[in-house]
Amino acid sequence: MRDRVALSLSIMAGMRIGEIAALTIGDVRDLDGRAVSVINLSRHQTKGSKSRRVFISAELQKLLNQYLATISDLSDSRAFIRSSRTGSHFSNVSLSLRFKAIYAQAGIKTSSHSGRRTFATRLNAAGIGMRTIQNALGHANIQTTALYCDVSDDQLANAVNVI
Image (tube, rainbow, N blue to C red; front, side, top):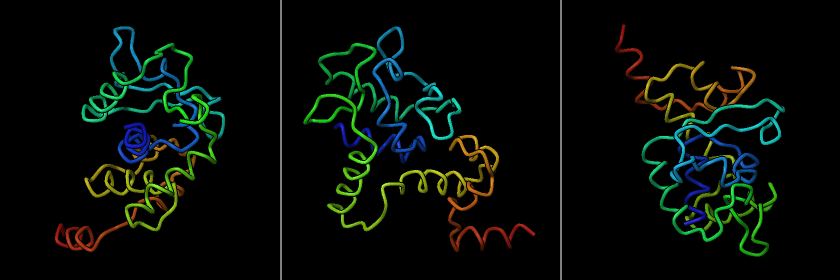
């Protein structure tokens, strides 16, 4: 369940490995004990030292709630995604290696960053504007965002048929 939640935060919310590793219970749980609809990341949890908001879908909220129900110590300062070995936060490298191992078990040769790319590509395929995707990913430069968005043949065919 922990691995599914970590991967889902990458694929369904576009979070970076370091952001996922840095999450605490207090970041994902509201005062009522349920998963939040927006995760507010501090500048210490993000790349580039800029705070950002991560919007969470209803489907992902449901998964987060299921995972929260399995955690015994729900102190706000405790790691949300915990290492089985230490019981605390994963390092960025350890979580990255965990993602790569999960992808490898599924027969997918890719990087740990693939979830974010999938997130961006899916938004782009759904017709979401590049500036919105840029903000969702927390990129400072829109050109970086464009590199994340693969274009399918269906999208190209649809594009020329609009004219």
